[in-house]
Length: 371
Image 1 (cartoon, helix red, strand yellow):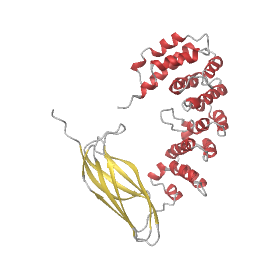
Image 2 (cartoon, one colour; image 1 turned 180 degrees about the vertical axis):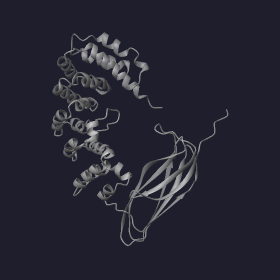
Image 3 (cartoon, rainbow, N blue to C red; image 1 turned 180 degrees about the horizontal axis):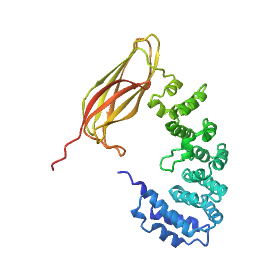
Image 4 (cartoon, one colour; image 1 turned 120 degrees about the vertical axis):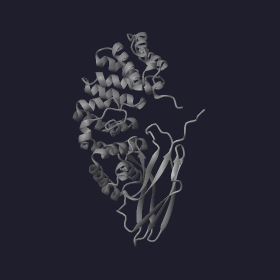
């Protein structure tokens, strides 16, 4: 079993934080900080642990944010000197987000300085929520920074639906203000940054599919391989849903004269094993066809209804008269994000976003061991 995430914040880490802050503030009450930050720590989950450590910072750093910010800035790593880094900066993010809003520029400067040592994508969101126009004006200036972590922060921290973080409702409603940031970073030399841009655009596509499809269309002509990958990754939700413009952006038109046969090799699947199936596609038309093949597993829910989940399969081009058979196994095994129920499920084949074939299969749960 993997180590629980909550254990990333532990008592030894709190002690290290105390040493690194105390080394830059003679008045810092190290013992009080450790006592407050570890009181009941082991009973808490990750974000609760972070909040407990943040509260200990509230109690032991100066009330004047400018003084506290100077201590935290001095406590960041420097050449030849360890400092606050890694997961110990999660509660620091929370501290800055709570105490720094009335010192807007200073708070964002501090978050910018700490992001190379962990990330500040959680901290800057409170600033965007407080004053979006002012925050984005500052963050937009980071797109040309020499540090890749700072450039990534400009795209990742402004994602409307960043996982594990507060949503930004104004940007969910109208994401247009972040598009110049994403455009500026679209050809960043670092894949690490470009992936963040793609993920942000994919966030936007969940609420504004036509906007993202149009954005992709405007930036795909003569795109480099790296940009093309980014734009396709940004379109993944739209492609899975069969959005017509998104499909057309990548040369996937509505299929014509296409024959699709689906054959299940095992119509009954024991939980923990897999569904084996074959897809045979034939281009019965007179022109080549570019085909994006996905499949959807319609899982049975507790109330007996079916809920689809789309999975990527393969992209091919078929010449006139050409056929191709694709073999796949879909694992039906325990995962943390889904509860499985026995009974009739369905698999559907999607070609260029349109369902072209489907079959039902039965999921069987193993019987309990009588021993």
